[in-house]
Image (cartoon, rainbow, N blue to C red; front, side, top):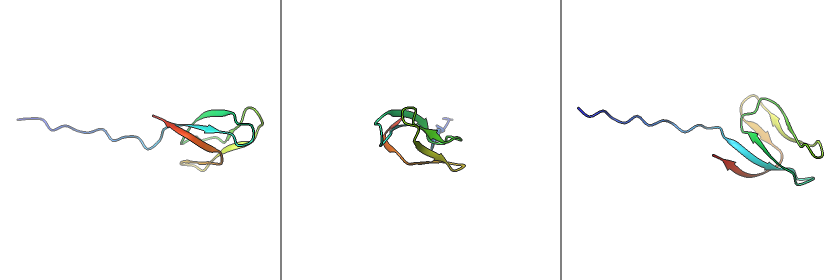
Length: 65
């Protein structure tokens, strides 16, 4: 008998490249981060932790899969 293939589901989380709207600095963050993400250049809050997925206040450039 042939064994059926079991497909591995893709994760719902990934790494995201975001850009600060004030100073333009780019930063990589995890889409389910448990901490608030701030810009290292100007100190602005770029993403807020909500317990699950992060609420992003900056521009998302691309998902890094």
